[in-house]
Length: 161
Image (cartoon, rainbow, N blue to C red; front, side):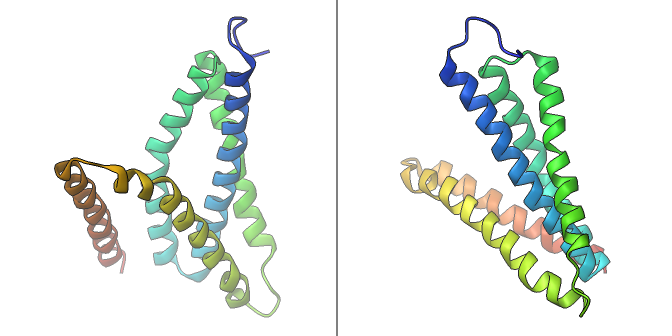
C-alpha cells in the first residue's frame, strides 16, 4: 500500500503502531488543551505552549520513524497529519463531556488524567536514559535543559497574566 516492496513486515508493523500511539497521544493533548481553556484563558495558553514545544520535535521524530518503516515522504506526511485529528477528537470530547453541574467537575478528572499520563510517559522514557548516562557532562546538560524548560514555562506564566 504505502510501503516499498523491500521492507519486511516488522518495520511495517512498527510504522502502523507508531501511528496508533501518536493518535492516542494527540487525543490526550486535545483533552488537556480543551480542559485547560475551560479553566481559564491563561492556563489554556500555557498548556497549548507546553504541548506545542513538546510536539514539534516529537512529530519530526515520528516522521523519521515512518520513513524508516518504509513509507514514502508524501505518505508519511499525510499519515502524520491525519494523527492530528486525534487532538481534535480529544478537544471535542473534553468540550462535549462538560458536566451540567459546571466546568469544575469536568476538569476535576480530565487535567489530572492527562498530566498523569504525560508524567508517566516522561518517567518511563526519559528517566532510564538519564540513569544509564555515564558522562556527567551529558547529565548536567540534560538537567540544565530541563531547568530551562521550567524557567520558560514560569516566564510564560508571568507574561500571560
